[in-house]
Length: 158
Image (cartoon, rainbow, N blue to C red; front, side, top):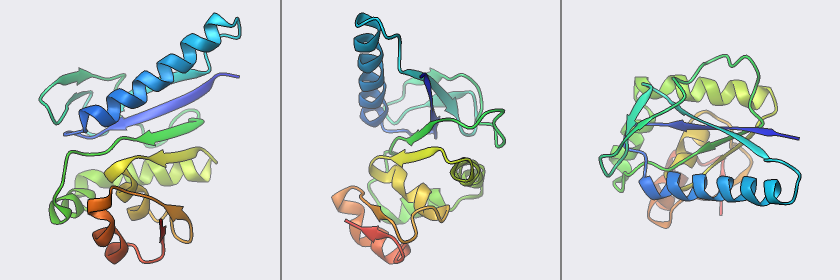
């Protein structure tokens, strides 16, 4: 069964966070195709604020469009790559900016549709800000752990 994977991109997405994710999904599709089962994932990279997203290292990526708050069909999986922000204050300002509310509403809608939601590195801050990790285990980058615990005490940070 083909799983729809949505990867919402924010400006300043960490290149390695996105690159590794894309490589793994593509490798899985190639392996399944080589064994005659066909691809496992339909990967849809979308911009949160614009259809063209500039990464942390300055590469401009054309996405499959802008994130739709009410997708026609809920994705099977949503994966949030990390942002290139090492300063906790700046990261929290980004997470709580008005521009990020559409991402959080999208995540809440997907959670209600039973999509699997996941993130890596600082991307987990958006899931927590949306209230989707309360009472659940989560991980983040080691240098962000103290601030994460302060901001989201109801999440079981591991």
